[in-house]
Length: 284
Length: 134
Image (cartoon, rainbow over all chains, first blue to last red; front, top):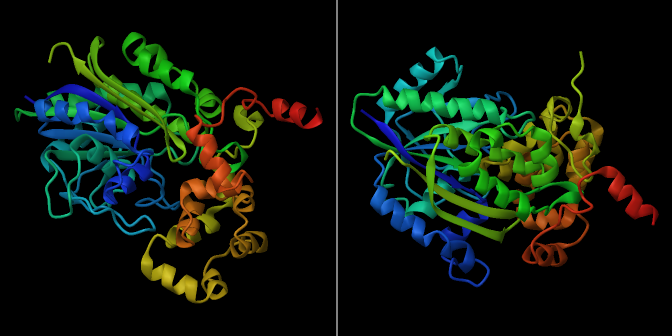
């Protein structure tokens, strides 16, 4: 059967992708940001996921304001990197495990999570930056080392889904994966954050204490963490920091007890605190 | 029934809720159209003619033409949409923040390198009001 063995939390700051695409990751500004992902790339080589279930948000790229699904599951055979206004990122096309994706779609809906099914979709930096930082540089002619099932979550128009809903969706995703016959190693990514505000006069807000506490509670108090009200994210972690709700999908899909095997935190990448964690199920 | 907006007392922040989304719909749809090069080419050739395709308010249209970045947010624009207009002008997210905060790019970048804007004194509107009075 397919099984979820580990979870990755990871920021998806667009400037990180730009730095990789321009080959400037060794510059003093970027070096400490990328240094924290060296261990992650080694971990990925050992973990060798067949499939990555990647929870991210679209940044008004594939979805305009005409249709705003709260949860949209990518069921297309592949997903092209989108032009977000400065040309598509020079990274590989993202290939799906289409049979598993459609199995998960059916399972989730029967499990009372009424998700939207996307049979055509482009993907933006929210999805491609986590793949880049975890797998390293890959050009457009290369292949990503794993298949990817994208789950796009609305965090642009308030309110995003609650942390509790995201956590329970993670549990339902786990049930869906474990009811799939093929023997597959699945790693789940929750992306976005950490604290940041991109807009208006409070732009630039960073809350290191809040971020570190969030990372701590992913192992010490994941259920309590998932109960955090939206207003706390907005006030403490910035208006765009609310996208951290997506990490609860990842956490909900793991065992109650997990082992933190890697953590990285760095300020700043552009406007944002970069946070990253790798959690392994004790049961493997 | 009305939903209480507990977030209204956060200073210097627009929360893009359903009310703002409704107000800014045409503006945001215009902004996202600039995601594609072919549309950017048409817009840059004749901004006013391109804007005629969107039923924006005169205030929204004026804010676009003036590149009044904070005005766009006040009139229902969302940062992920307005950043498409900024990208068209060659302005990235960090430079845009320098403009919206009124700090300028250099001072804003230096603040970020120094660890960003602290949450201390920046959680509630009354904290900003008291700072202004003192």
